[in-house]
Length: 400
Image (tube, rainbow, N blue to C red; front, side, top):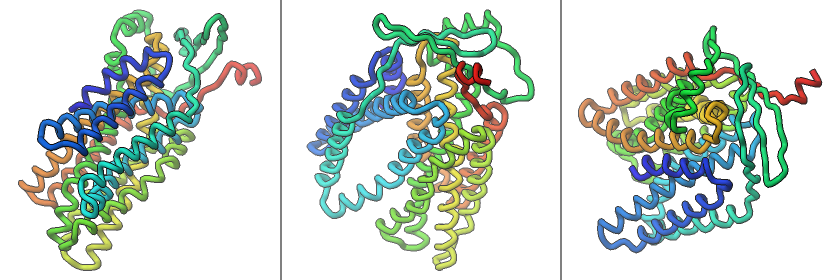
């Protein structure tokens, strides 16, 4: 909950700040303080406070980190690098319970506490050495032919750059944006303006589906393999490597979306993941064949997940760029905060729903429900997700 409500508040400040440095340091301080409280907690109140601080710091670091990423990389590489970032997020969610369980079993709570502080220290060191590109004041001006033009100024020096953003429409026909509509949109708060964009809503729904799948499997899969195969906690944790390892293909999926567009890459990801989840119901017996089948299905599902996660993460950046031009202000952090809200809500609701389904109807019907829910992402992505996107500078136009 702290993660869900903290992200929009953080984005409101980050989009207006001249530097991402201050909120990033604030997030590191919060996560370090939360880790200290976690390690020293002696009652429920201290433990709850530590988790609240972890949630708020997560919303800050996630939102600011993705905003810095987009500021740093080229617009034609957003999908590739967004795929890298989202893959790391998935790997962390999947692997951390396994590593935390091993550390807790071998060294107790303080061992987990020490690792958390160590990771925080590494984050601080990397942040000190990172060269953040200077954020210049941007004044977005939307022209009638949908070409973006903005002026950048730093002090007394100003440079005007012409950028043409060519976007193939998501449908067969597209209507020009009227002046009155653009004027009404500029009056809206940034986050509300973003929520009016169907492409962003489709991307958020896809990210929500991904996180729901991961969180649901993290909650139910260990119990299933323990009851079916009589595996120990370590073996149950190692099975998640079948999902985690293929997610390192996120940069490849992002590069494909940069080249061919996000729409059909994402649709194919949903279409391939859904049957893999449904087929998990075939795993029933304590035999080598069924163990191999489980590992194979989880590996293929993990690979298919990357096909829609990376393109939809990049979609959030592209929608933020277009809406920023309409609104006349930077909305990258706001867009990523909404994506973070989708992740946080799925992390909360996914395990509750999956656990309830397993208790009420069993593992087989839970897998059917999970696969059917994944298939729901096909329709909005096929209808509104952006297709191939090209960014051309005025120099390219003049040379052509």
